[in-house]
Image 1 (cartoon, helix red, strand yellow):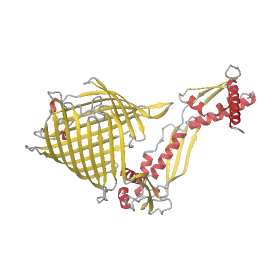
Image 2 (spheres, rainbow, N blue to C red; image 1 turned 135 degrees about the vertical axis):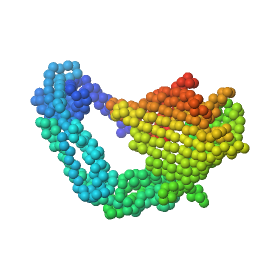
Image 3 (tube, helix red, strand yellow; image 1 turned 180 degrees about the vertical axis):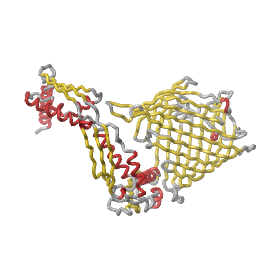
Image 4 (spheres, helix red, strand yellow; image 1 turned 30 degrees about the vertical axis):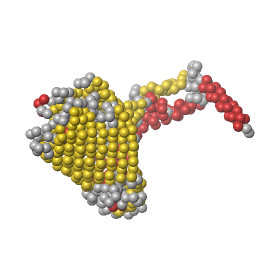
Length: 593
């Protein structure tokens, strides 16, 4: 067959098929189904699940077949309603043989769901090691306390299944990864609309952690893996410990992919932990080109050396250049010790343009840091220097000893929906000018996420405050003082544009700073389904001054959108700065805390 003959045959077949489809589409349906209910969500839910709707296109149904379909549909509808907790519904079917242009019959179903069944009793029983182990008493109590379907609550099959799954996961998360449900029953008393629930959980044996079985460690040592995993042989199994080990290994930057799991073939008194790794390259270059709303095009370059020759530390060098800010930084991080403390060194050089003046600054830091799931700690010595040109002339230097602490209690990262976080930085030192002046600096931040309901979203309340305590701050570098404004400060204002106004119009940093924000984040739904997008309405305020009694806050407010992107939360905000009477677009990526 030639290519042209084959193409002609294909076109002819497609034409015939389209004609058949058109002919069937022009024929009226066998019946039109209309469902109504005294319960708001039942009618569309029933239309979606009732099998009767599949037979609407069978135009050759006779009366006997139609009657049988309605009897089957009545039985299925009652079964469907029972899964929602309605065991005594009243169903009224009506078949109208009058034909129309679109259908040959009309079928109407009116549903009175009746009273919903309620849980009258819940019984949770135990089998296996958990039943008699004294150390597991708190775990048993937790399962009972957090049982998702208590007495007095409405019953539904989906909630019953979810409650069982949640209870089993609670048992499996600590000591007993082999736990299973040996028996479960929902005993329905339809006349009284009551349900008695019973479930028996067999925990199996207690499991303790054994040695690590590491695969994929070629460029970096197994000792590094063991320290980052921080799993102690002989410790009682906790799923959380394995997840945190996996997270620490991924966050270290040495590995592109990590999978941590129990070896199912291991003995329960010392189960080996399998750590499967895909290592990153020892060296990596990353180039980027972007646009900032305040400074136009921006070029970035980053070079990572995961094992510096002769030192064994990880080094990251970054270069960022745009019209306003040119920055270079070097970050050095040593491998962790047994307690996850690491030596840390950093250097940063900046040149930044402000209104009326430019600032060249440098910062050198060396100390120790510990990063964990919920808490970060650092202590370090720091040298700061800055020199200004233009309307604010001067060279300033300082040295200080510092401590930083961050505390996080969010439900999930990097996309939290509720929780609380706080951080505190404390430093004390002296300026290095001709008149040396001691100073103390502190900076505190807090973020609170409070859910408002499944469809109402949440409130995000953010606060930040800091000050420099010193008799005279004129000799301190600008990097030790405060400015506000920008994406994560007061939106509606340019970064570092909120400060102490000078007589010549320049904005200088101040010794006191306070900012706050209240934001309503609400999920965006499409076809009654949640999406990866959220809307936001916010109000920000902040002030910077050299006098506690002369602070004057500026306000910004606006709307925005949030997207759960593959690289983290993406924020797009359009804010109006009341003091400058201008709109400003803010873009940022990542959860910052």
